[in-house]
Image (cartoon, rainbow, N blue to C red; front, side, top):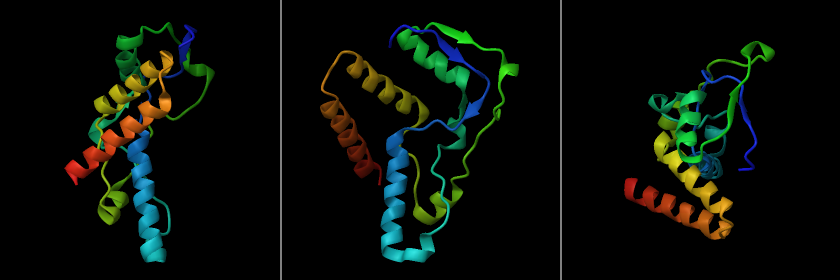
Length: 144
């Protein structure tokens, strides 16, 4: 947003991209189950995207760059270490909580782009965020 160069460390890295509302819905569902059933739902939980939605950093950058035209620089990979592929096993959340993400990756990025576009033009972000949340909840009621 400040027209600074964006440094991409590892464009081929695979990451589990998802919208924060999908993640928050998972945690809220877990909290409700913990409140109702206690110990049965204690332990570790993952809330991640469908495996068919996982894309490399380069795909995300390309999608965002088609909208915003960043000044991008790819760094030399040997200058740092990080895992090439990160995945989340959300099968426990799917089977025991009935949780599934509602947004696919394209919708996730579209909603993120929309939010930042509104932020960049100094719109009322409380209203924008509430509108996106209302839309998400409406989607939840339609799908469930």
